[in-house]
Image 1 (cartoon, rainbow, N blue to C red):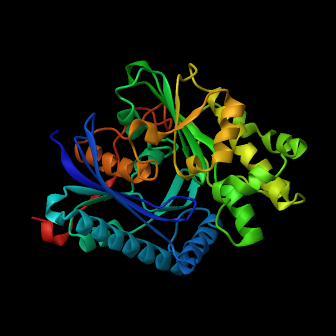
Image 2: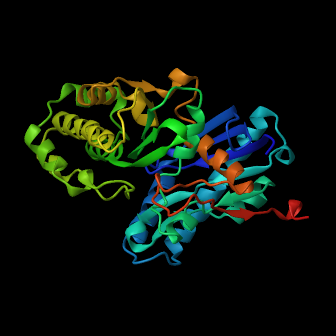
Image 3: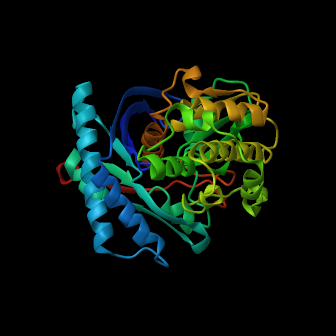
Length: 369
């Protein structure tokens, strides 16, 4: 497949905002980032999505609900605004872009029940942008018996294709996940546990700030080893991959009696220890560990990961990539692969029986012919 321009979007479980990225790619080894733009959600927008999450988690399966419809329309229009802004900034006309990958917003992830739920109206976004959109990228995987997550490993493999293997990429978003790339491009990937989510909600509840900036609170606190041990006494960590999480599968209840600083320190160390347990599931120890996602900007977390794992985590910028853009770029890359019928999930990443493509193509009326 010849290289094409693709737009990609991501709105993660941290609910911090929307990311948009433009890449040139053939869906295989050629990837050239062209631009990135990110906008934070307003307090009202975050509250709208949070209400939708609360409604979704109370349901036995995805169903129509006015609260969720409201969140979905807002979310879609927010993506459209950001996408148009990125293309305008780069001087790229929509007609030059072949496809957009639209992840949407996960409001509940229940592969154990046979479903995962990402809101976002792909057809509405296609009309607003004037270009084809591929959405529902996780649905086919779950329908085939996979976890539906993580999906980024195929893009991670492209990013490190020139490096000696094995290597690993750790994504520290609301939930953490690890990708192991071995010889012959072998992939193993899974969610490790909470990454930024628990400490973010702990800090926000106490201070109103959305996260522990630069890990300062955690650095000022002391890890409560008994609380940490209790949090790590969870069968999840010994469960072999493939496995994936909903961001609400873990809570910060165990640190409720601690001071703000000690709670932040304990939750941050908990994230580091989940990475240790994740690395133990790999076929061989990776020679290098690259880190993407917001957690790489937390020096206390990065130090704790180094201490716990015995391998120095390296921001993915070491490779010349933008760690903030990785997920949005990844969904652009997956859209290119989906257009070409190439797989986006694999037995070693989601547990799907065979490599599988995915997504639903939405054509704007202006390009329907």
